[in-house]
Amino acid sequence: MLGERSRALEDRIAEAIPDLAGPLQGSGLTFEQAAAETLRLLRETSRPVRRPVLASADGLRSASPAFILRDGDALVIRDVRLAHRPLSRRDNRVRVAFAGWLARELTGRVVARLEIVNGLGEVQEVEPEPDEELARLSARTVELLGDSPEPDMLLAHSHCQHCDHYAHCWDRAEAEHRIEVMPAVTRARAELLRAEGVRTYHELAARKPGSFTRRELREAAPALLDEARAFATGAPVWLRDPALPRDRTPVWFDVESDAEGERAEVPVYLWGLAVERDQPRFEPILSELTPEGDAQAWRRFVARALEVFREHPDAVWVHWHHAEPMWIDRYIARHGAPTEFVECMRAPGALFDLHHRLERCVRLPLRSTSVKFVAPWLGFQWSNPDADAAWSTAQLHRARATDDASERGRLLDEVARYNADDLWAMRVVWRWLAAYPG
Image (tube, rainbow, N blue to C red; front, side, top):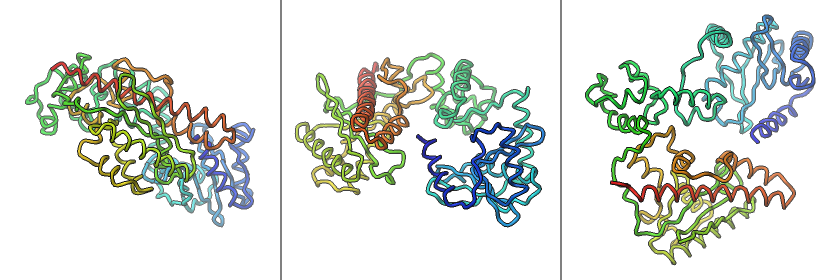
């Protein structure tokens, strides 16, 4: 889905560029043919080029920005990124600067500007990286492609999990019992711990708070040592009674929202709930994927929520993390709601963040406290193991794009089934916490 959106954005930009040659990459030419044609166009013509192939003479370096444009005799390197703030990431800046460096080397022409078009269609100018830094990064890349040991650069799980090398790095790190797999061990803390001779969570679990020489580690010791003991034993380390509101009626609550957030026509396309009973029933409230459908789905949700509050005045709406309260507030502002609904939802304790309570009361031997890790550790499995929030958003966009009503219904049914599994996963975690052994 993201690839399709990126190509559509690039197509819109290309339509506004007169006499555009290409795209050369992916045109049916071999890599070498595309590189030769790129050089011919840049050296012998004044035409802008889409998806050029820049290849160094030694065959070790290449780049293919979205466009190379012209400013008189000078070149303008323009890339395209769906992100709204692409300049906040150094890899985006380096990528464009490297393409400019290589274009200048191959053609002898001046590079007038480096640009990135963001997901909003805005052209943002990029500050060039110094030539010395680009040369250093290029040399380091060649080293890594050779016999140089791979870099040791584990980042936070939330950062690494989307990397193509995630399984390779993190599975190996867990097998080696490294401290970096612990959520409490930030990159800064990992460096401090390694400086004190601690490299595995077994070594960390054996330490005492007063044994650390650095004040930062002594202050963080309670959290670090509890979590290290959980990893070392493979068992939970309880900090306190979860103190769940057991005398109240849980309503399992989860929303599916578009990655575009409030910029989307339909920010929340599914409001999922299930009232706790002997056999709780999943109640999905799906939007029709239009602005009017968005408002109607919200009104149906509000009406159903009021019915729940009237039937169960003690209802506690159990959610995971902060998205659900955030969307409740945003939709009250977006479409309005009866005073009774606002007062009920904003009453103290009406909304209950199960993730927050879990993190306050127990340490687990898991690389993440996402429900996608906690619930499977307790034996729960999603009916579709490939489903997650990004998958759900992709299903939404496929449903919106199709003119086939039955296909749209099938896709949204899959999203609803995934949302139901999220609710049952929370229920499993709740029941486990409710059985607190202390």
